[in-house]
Every structure is written in structure tokens, then in C-alpha cells.
Image 1 (cartoon, helix red, strand yellow):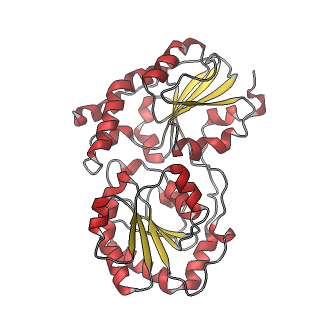
Image 2 (cartoon, one colour; image 1 turned 120 degrees about the horizontal axis):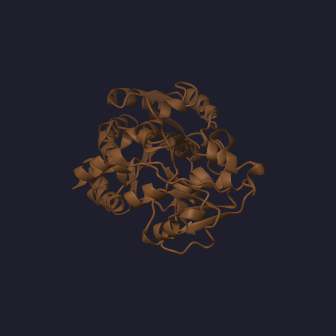
Length: 352
């Protein structure tokens, strides 16, 4: 079933056509939505139009007449029915995607329950969503390329609410252990497997280095023999943000194996690592080479070469001055992609 569903991605076509001027912006998302917060909240705080946030499973809190609706990842039975009912009176519908839904369906490296959830969503709602969607906002070049035949597709990059960059945070106390972290979530199972020999080698070579990983019981079992590797359950998004304000690491890891799902990911991990005051080692190539300048604000290394990651970690652990220089170079990316339509919505003359 999953394989046949994934084929449908080639036939997704944005069919929504609208010519009304927007009177308000309505953002549809799950109650807790990192995607909404990373891509929209800061931008929409500057919008001259009224902005309303609509939670999946609930009725829209305002009239949809003359509304520009931004669908963040998902719709459900309640929301799609209301969008369809108001379709003739909308000013537009954008679908914001930061993952490749179709690729997830056939990617055997992802957890089965996650693939099943995506399959359910796609089978039940893809055709209905296509009929009302006027454009897609894609969070990576690869995803935009994949969806290029679907209609109007634009790139969008993260722009979260400002946080203290690594150079703006207190220096760690001298003599403290070097702290390394990897916070890959449930869709990063292959990366945790791949990292094991890298982490084990560094763990055994440097007794003062501590590691933190996010994972479940299987991850704990995998790393059980390494006494300075601490495996913590996944955080909720609010807890993750709160913890990033009080916890500091030195080095963050962002490997990215070349799987169908991974090829469409965004460079959001760059921001995750910066939140914790760290400098990162990233998989070279897309998406990280668009924001990471090797040897200036991080290190880029091949995800096909574990030894290169071991050497990069060793360099950052042993050379405090080099690590601090890279950490000081971590900043907001110079170029941030913004869909033209969203730019228009943020202009003062967007009001009716």
C-alpha cells in the first residue's frame, strides 16, 4: 500500500484559484507545531493584516471570507471541510511543507508508525488538499524540485524568534567536560545507528567528553556500554525551547544519511545547535552547505566517511581556540528564502 500511495505524489496539482484581496491571515496547524513557530510566528508578528491561529480538530476561530489560509503540514476532517465550504470566498491557500510527505511513505528507514500516519494522511486528504491549494511553500531546494510540477512552488527558510547566539552566551567554565550532543528525533533512526562507532571511538579516546542523545529504549540499549553517553527521551517542543535557554553544549552533530526522506530536509538543525551555544559538524552537501561555511561557522564532513567525523570531533575537542573561533562564527544565515506571496502579505499595502 505504501508504495502505491507514494506514486501519487507525481500527480499532486495545486488547483485552487483565487482573486480576492486578503483581509486576514489564518494559520492552520497542530496545537504544538515547531514548523509553525520556526517559519511563521516571527514573520507574521510583523504582518499589517490580522493574524489568527487555527488548531487542527477545532473550528476556525474567525470567518474565512477573504482569508489567506496557510496550512502547516496537515489538514484534518474538520479543517478541510471548512476550507472547502469557504473556497469561493478565500484569497488563497498555501501549503507549508518542511518534510517530503510522499517520500516518507516508501522509506523503510523511517519508523513504521510514522509511515502509517503519513499514508493515512495522504490517502485521506491529498486529493482534497490539492483542489483548494493555490501554492506550496517548500523548506528545501530538494523538496521544491520534487514538487516543481505541482503548480506554484516557492522556497521558504526558517526564521524563528530570536535567541542568544553562541557568542552571546556565557563562556563555559574552564576545566569542564566537553559536551557533545545529537538531538535527532524519531525520524533519524539511521543517523543514530551510523553515529554509534563515531561516538564510541571518541568516548573511549577522551575520558572527559560527555555525550547526550535523544532516543527511546532501543537507543539506550545500543549505547548502554558507554557510561558517558546519556540518552534522554524526546522533549516536547515547549520543553525543548525552555531547555535551550538554560543548557549549553560545546559541539552539536548533524549527520544526514542519503535516504529518500532525508534528501528533502531543511537546514533547521543548524539553528538547533546554535540554540544550545554550540558549534556543529554537519553532513556536507544539501541542505547544510547553504548555511555552513566549512572552517568558519562549523565543519562539513561526508556522511559516507565516519573516520572524517571522528577526526573532526577530535580536532574540536583538542583545539579549544579553534572550537571557540568556529563558535564565534555561528550567526544568522545571510540569505533567507521568502515566498513572494508571503512577502506581499507582510507589506503595508496588503490591506484591503
